[in-house]
Length: 183
Image (cartoon, rainbow, N blue to C red; front, side, top):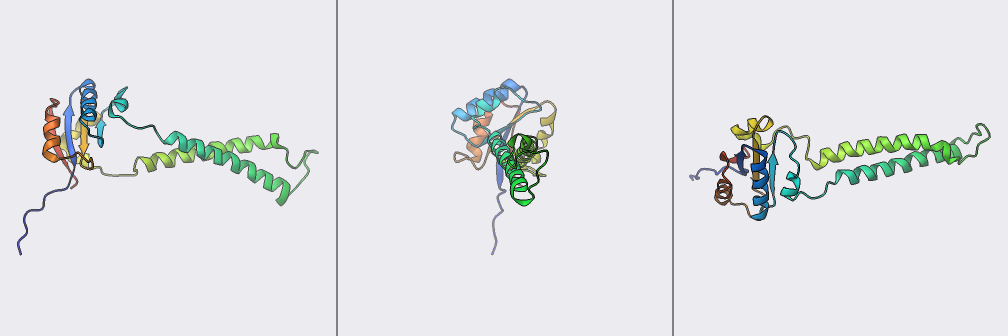
């Protein structure tokens, strides 16, 4: 039984721009056109690009706050347990639950937990480690770290259609438009 050619699975369609202003304008138009799953790539941060893309509020600060709070509680709980129940020892005539003496250790554990929460949440929310991304399959993307700006509409967007997305990106006057394959 003969099968037809297998159509490659696409990650999306990518457009290449020459200036940050062009990619900013393209991001605004892409969002206005109803696309929600798209990303922009640039060699340096562009002020206002995340607003133009409609990126939601970052979750990492909340993870850091929660991790720090758990760290503070853990540091205090450990010292209360050790000084009051496990190994009570009267040092210098102070009380078993002398909270001012617990502050330095609780502070250090707060910083430790907050730092680990920042690292782990950043890695998890960014989907890292990811040694290869499909956008690396586009030869022009090699210039993304030097002097070019890219916008990629992803195939997981509900409005995505390969030809429709390509035509839309071409209407934005990019230097080039390329399909991004998953292979």
